[in-house]
Image 1 (cartoon, helix red, strand yellow):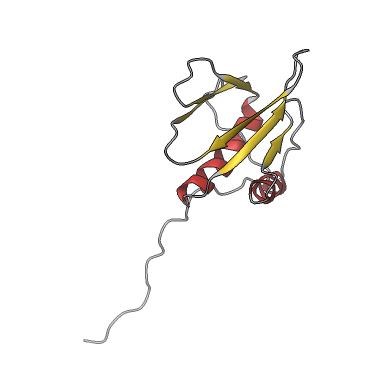
Image 2 (image 1 turned 180 degrees about the vertical axis):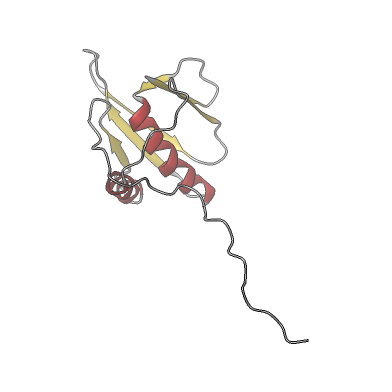
Length: 122
């Protein structure tokens, strides 16, 4: 179970590592573009209600994972989450949802630059 620390609040939001890994990619992408949005979830473990966070670049965020190994990301889940984050309703996550495994890993960083094979004439 991972933890999301938001703002200056010392209490973390407990989120499963797999979901937190996907959330991190979507949040980082949106905030890198200076795009603010909301993230909402329904409380679990018998707690009533739901919570919503307003995410914007000036508010500190920290993602802490229990596992040292990164999770394999599911491309369709990332797309669905990004689409929701881009909507006026914001991103709604289910803390108890199962994210399906994916056959091929999703690239989360840019590929290394390719070397040119062109040679100039002398």
